[in-house]
Amino acid sequence: MKQALNALVSVYMRELRAYFLTPLAYIFIAVFLLALGAFTFEIGHFFESDRADLSSFFAFHPWLYLVFLPAVAMRLWADEARGGTLELILTLPAPTWSLVIGKFLAAWTVAGAALLLTAPMWASVNWLGAPDNAAIALAYVLSFLMAGGYLAIACALSAAAGNQVVAFVLSVAVGFLFTAAGLPIVASSVAGAAGPGLAEGIGAFSLITHFEAAQRGVLEARALVFYLGFIGLWLTLNAIWVGARKGG
Amino acid sequence: MELLTVDRLTKSFGARQAVRGVSFSLGSGQATAFLGPNGAGKSTTLRMIAGFLEPDAGDALIAGKSVLSRRTAAQMRLGYLAEGAPLYLDLSVRAFLRFLARTHGLSPAQSRLAIDRVAADARIEDVLARPIETLSKGYRRRVALAGAIVHDPPVLILDEPTDGLDPNQKVAMRALIARMAPEKAILISTHQLDEVEAMCSRVLVIDQGEIVADAAPAELAASAPGGRLEDAFHQLTHTEKAA
Image 1 (cartoon, chains in turn purple, red):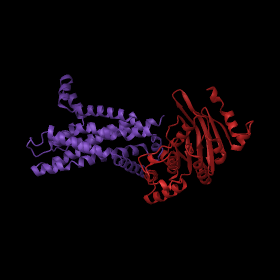
Image 2 (image 1 turned 180 degrees about the vertical axis):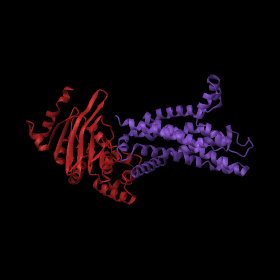
Image 3 (image 1 turned 60 degrees about the horizontal axis):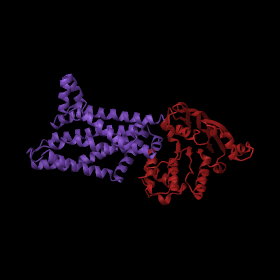
Image 4 (image 1 turned 135 degrees about the vertical axis):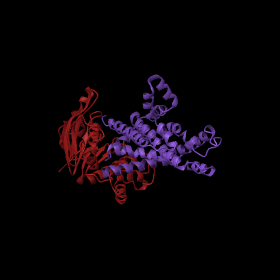
């Protein structure tokens, strides 16, 4: 176990270094912040809403994650396959799961850094009024967990596809399915065609369903279970797909 | 003492059987050449020993640890230079070696000492701070070798270690392997027959996935009418032409 943790930390540090040695992390963070600002103020009408909350800010998180996070994670395994270093990393004394988690955590750290840099928004809304800070803090935590969900999909598909472009496209497509499942229009369509039970069931698997509840300040244990389980499921698939490459 | 035991390793890719029940063992103090024509199953065998490919049947024991049932423990005792010497080009040489040392469980202090040791051995001290992507092919090969020995493993597997090196670098690489040989079991895959006689005390020849010869270089050379290793190799692996 100690050796597995050594490897996990080592891979995490190597990947984090790779993100920040190249412009990738900086570009991602800068463009993400710009896009989030533009959506919040221009489309979300932050000032016009005349409310001291961050609902118009959080509303766009899933959609930006859907596009931006696959770009962060698509290289993680596909790059190893392209550069021939898959053979190097898979012959290191480390169980596959420690490599998978190390890489995932590095990408999640980049996403977390981007989220952390939105803190001035939170400070601004406190300056403008008296928001429900507990609800905002909760929404931040759930947003971070939701980002982990999108990243886990992209990590797994990076391993499965072995090509960055294919991994990106697949990750956006799969991420969209797990986002759209929670949209009212999908719920009403499914409810009309197959009944409300199925609509509720499909909605429960959406990455945005539990996030919307958190924005209202409602902390549900099942939300934590959902996000952690979702991440765990996709990382398991990630490990399986990496392991499949050893079959030749 | 046997440090590497390969027991009936078998691997197929689709309908093609690449490796057919390959068995051999290597003891300490032995540098062994692993020869064979392209497509004979050399790299597939080495990849199975290193734990990169799952064999269909058979096993490999590295310092007594099974690569199938105790893969991590086996890989801790193995230094593996893969074909093409894959490297993280975005890292500096020192960062790359530190990554490998830390992944093998060395503490920061141990890692520093190990990096200094292998940098001297592989003669890469002058490029430790440079990004790998800026290095020549010869330097990259030496960095990859340094990475394979940074944790001082008892078993070394080197897949074409001198490929891409200039004559001076080849001499230096051979000298390094000769220095390490007394304490380790070293398996070297190569196409350079002159290196075999210079570096190895034993030769394994693989053809069409099977070991077809296992002898000392001089003994193998003497078995051919021309008395040369090249003739013996050609005689043993001529089936490639028919394939």
